Length: 353
Image 1 (cartoon, one colour):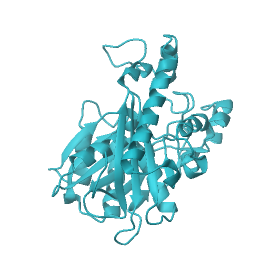
Image 2: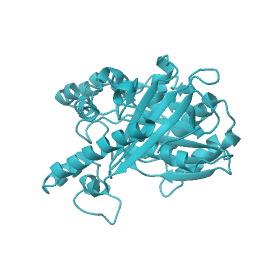
Image 3: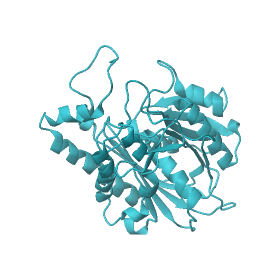
Image 4: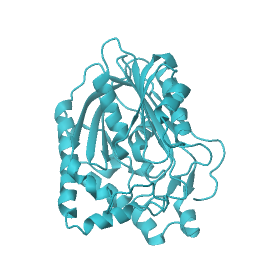
């Protein structure tokens, strides 16, 4: 979907302090050989805030970065993977009330790790001339008795954090050039597990066991090919919509998987090398689920001097399967200052968990 006069007005992130993977290995939480393969240096671990409270922190920073008032937010989308702070409860309404205002239209989204970019695309589709801005927030805290961030999935360690983005028509330094989503819903069984359950399970969630079960059905190779095909089609589709090529891109931001999975992701992006990706930063925070792309973008904007015309590719993917890609362009409009704010707690990280 090619877009005109649509801008990423502000980006906010909340990054908890990180604990070193060496510390996790020493504590017996993280296998040493797996740690070496994954390549993570540290993982963000939130000590105090629940997921939606982190989302609200990120949202406030996005407002500040955009230089706009809370009243400008007409609609808010919120999403995450794991427990948000309460059951059978509208998390988006909490975030909207905390960050925007009681009359904001608030909706919870669910598209696994792709909810951040798919929410951004949905927001861009809903914007009309004269409408207010739309905020997209994502957040997760991967703790509790039922989730072990260090071992639930091979090749990924889950980090806590939150992100927020404000989309609108007011010209700003970061323009949304195009978005493109490709779905492969027949890959949904990969992560479903062996059977449905009438009750919420009480045992620990081990995602890898679901993948292992699906592998026994004999359909894994075909499912992997469908997923990789969806990613390839989404990337080629957004580049075509944006009228650009991989060679024209200055940066690419993909999910913060461990090194082996990260390499496979980049392997689907022909002619792109890891030095222009977010890997060096990703390996210090862990996989933040739906927040990876906006957190990665926030870091890029805060550490890199972009030139007018520079383009950035964001690649998102979520179990189900969907892949959403977004091409951004640095325009330098206005002050030319990056519309980004990142927050961290003042205290050092606590115990590994």
